[in-house]
Image: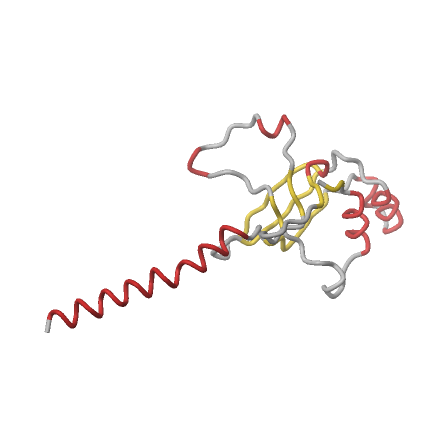
Length: 147
């Protein structure tokens, strides 16, 4: 009788381990999904829509952007960086269309070892697919350099 219980327990363990392998592969190969991108506008650009449109025509490279991503377990993470650190990119085996190339100043900042490293790849859904897509955001994306 105990052999049957041990056999079932071993099969359950194999199923749990085998079922976690695809999840781990997806977690490792995909980039964080960006749910919100907040561009920090200077005061003069916040006055009207015309001022925002004029500002977006040529965004200064040191403008800060906050990318809010959803992690593997549904937790939101906010990453703040200057716009000049982002590059458009295409990866063959990874789902990512933006890459962060950290500058010297952001590389020298100390980070606790238990917090892990910051992600360098991000995925923003194609604006043509999404409803209510913003032409302003498309203009900002066009100004990013290609890596």
